[in-house]
Picture 1 (cartoon, rainbow, N blue to C red):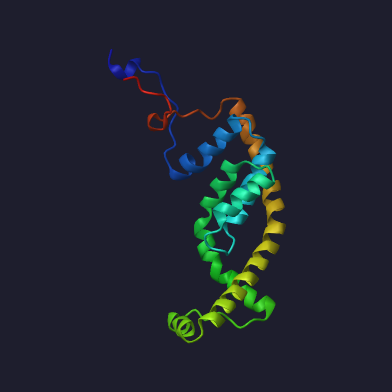
Picture 2 (picture 1 turned 90 degrees about the vertical axis):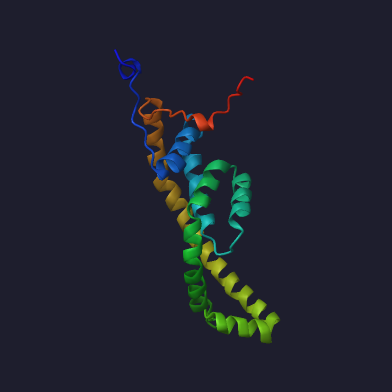
Length: 186
């Protein structure tokens, strides 16, 4: 009898990035007792805060919103960081849309124009940048107010069905030795 015959069979491991870094943490939160409803709202808030047009603010804003709304911090931060590339991709469209909606001068996107404005009148450029950013933020806020409930209501049934499957042990608990928190004896 060889060694392969004596080892118990294991469920297939899903090694793709999305499963390891998105699905498994959500499964773990459900296993630890997080309600599907609260988890859905946490994810929805994290997703929408993650695309806000104020670069560098999403982690702190998401953390504050999770505490104020008594949401799951881990789930909201996971969703927030997951959509970071979208924040960068949507920044320019938010600013362009802000120009249209609020009837402001369009933002010049050539480096030469921005550098010239910074050299000739930096205070005026700073004021204009704040105006563009403020308008983009107002549009994002309008989008967030509408989309957070829609996303949360759409995700809740999915998380409820995941919880039922997890309770019936249809998703294995995957132990990874490199994530073990047990103390090694000396």
